[in-house]
Amino acid sequence: MDLKQLVADAIDQSLDLDLLKDEIYDVLEVPRHEGHGDVAFPCFVLAKQLRKSPNAIAEELAENISGEGIGSVEVAGPYINFFLDQELVTEDILKEIYSQGDEFGQLHIGKGENVTIDMSSPNIAKPMSMGHLRSTVIGNAIANIEAKVGFNPIRINHLGDWGTQFGKLIVAYKRWGSEEAVKADPIASLLEYYVKFHEEADKDDSLNDEGRHWFKKLEDGDPEAVKLWKWFKDESLKEFNRIYDKLGVKFDYYTGEAFYNDRLQGIVDELDEKGLLEKNQGATIVNLDEFDLNPALILKSDGASLYITRDLATAEYRKETFDFAESIYAVGNEQSYHFKQLKAVLQRAGHDWQEQMHHIPFGLITAGGKKLSTRKGNVILLEDVLNDAVELAKEQIESKNPDLPNKDEVAHQVGVGAVIFHDLKNDRLNTFDFVLEEVVQFEGETGPYVQYANARAHSILRKAGFDGSKATDNQEFKLTDDVAFSVVKELNQFPSIVEKAYMTYEPSVIAKYVIGLAQSFNRYYAHTRILNEDSELQSRLSLVYAVTKVLEEGLALLGVEAPQEM
Ligand code: ARG
Image 1: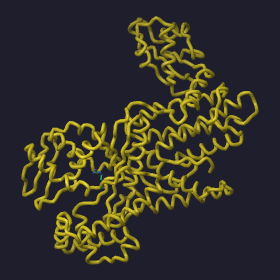
Image 2: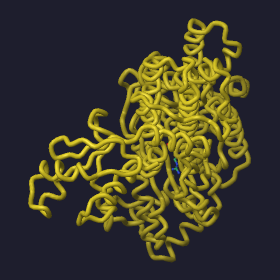
Image 3: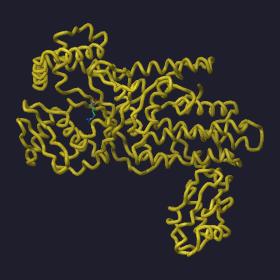
Image 4: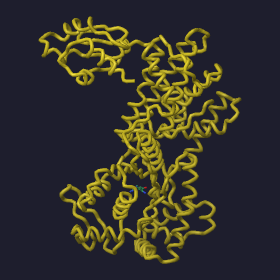
């Protein structure tokens, strides 16, 4: 329900202003303080026209305004403050939530068009880091939000499974590796070889040549090289999938960089035919001066392809295959330059659809203020973080609710949910420090806090034996207290919150919203005896049920589970 619209209608019907209804609507404000009403009309806008002071105008007009849904009208200086008819508005909003159920907040901005989301995309033979966690959960939430506004999201894992580093890895494995070690603990072993390679190569540069040589062999399909590479990849994927299972994230495609190998020549030919390729010190480049960017390096002097070459092939493939309305890349902001170059090359090649490609960058997660890196081996392993989070959640559940039957399941939902939520509640671009103990807290602006509010609401419903999903036409929705009304108004925000999250590619909009809703609900819970046997009991239960619906749907958009008991 659009509360501003209610007021705009009333103003439009009861006053004879030289303003269109839309113009009235656009100037209406939602006051910060509840004491200033639900909607306010600032009269400055009329001062010129009516040649009076805004205060005088407010006094004069306020007397004559009335209309459906308007409870009372007050003047505060130049503002006319509207207090809505709480009973009527509450009933309308709650009925809307009940009748729409899971569909509440569903928008129809999209008409089912495909939106590809490039997300997670870790590099094989390396541990998935906290940085990849960000891409995974941000990408997943954006995909959920795209679906909620009417698009068909396609989640693609663009695995980093190609590049000179695999030549290096093969060299390292052949020198220092053992099959047993890789089988026993694949990623740790491969990482060890990789780190060792860099240490040794710092002393002996010829190792780098050897690495390049083996990558060339891999590109040329040498059986030994291909076999090793495939094996590294399979072992890595097993580990990644374990983490995705924990996170509850699924992909539609695992098409990594290597998937595009047989399309690289096509890209080079296309750029060549369009006259875009130039030679520069033996390398093949596309000049991007007109975009104020450095040239894009398409082929090295030895003819090897690069990251951007493969991304060009990827972009064209996705356009051809999915005819996307939008193509989203959830990738850290350290790659912003790469995506600018990528789009610029496509633009030069005449592909106007590059405008539908959006790099959605995000900031770094640090631990104790330090950047996390896999290169030197000082990594935070995502799986350890998740396991620790679940452990911590379990301890808290153990002390709060020792009799809970499915403790392990709930600890998983809470621990993993806490990590995901923490990642998403920060504005994407913020850099933030990760302190596990703060993340898995039941108090404060955390995932468990929101989950706990939801579980509390469910426990009230259980005690009352209330099942909102079976609500009948006689369900009551009459509430007449201010605290309830502020919860109702907050629920009513959900569709516009979804829209804002979609427009800005910001899951944090939803995370912040569910925190706010959980807080309002907790205030209501502290202030009102919800289960009191009086004439409004059924209506209060209706409200509590609506709160669970919206909290759960909000959390679901973020990819966070919502246990009904915890
Ligand atoms: N594998 C890359 C990394 O870990 C991210 C890939 C992002 N996607 C892309 N299409 N370039 O840095």
